[in-house]
Length: 137
Figure 1 (cartoon, rainbow, N blue to C red):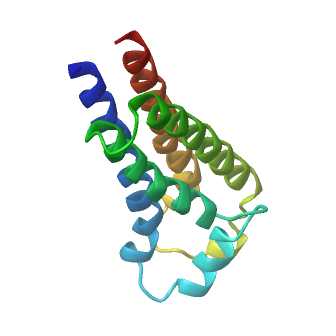
Figure 2: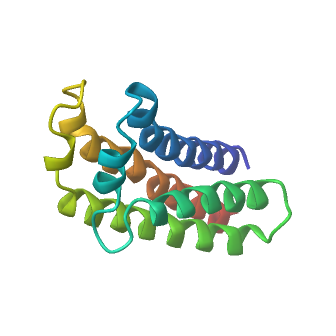
């Protein structure tokens, strides 16, 4: 039972970290909304699909741990959400162009998309751990 709670907490933290990491460029430099909009719109879904799945992931992990949903159902949904979120992040990172961000005040923006992918990878890993602990009990 303890592993389930830790895995769910890690999954929730990963989902929150995804949303925070995507909001960071807006917070760090005001006035770059148009350029960041172009940067975030890359790929078939842009990052908005990723934000959606991260927010739904928070609800799914909470529902499973708090007993609002059958834990095995929540574990399966969390795992699927984590994998899809990671795929969306990878597609976005590979198709995002940095041309619109030329002159952005922080040099870290060139690695931002890969940091988002790394943070997003926490979600399916936590979901896999959660699924394993649920199925073992």
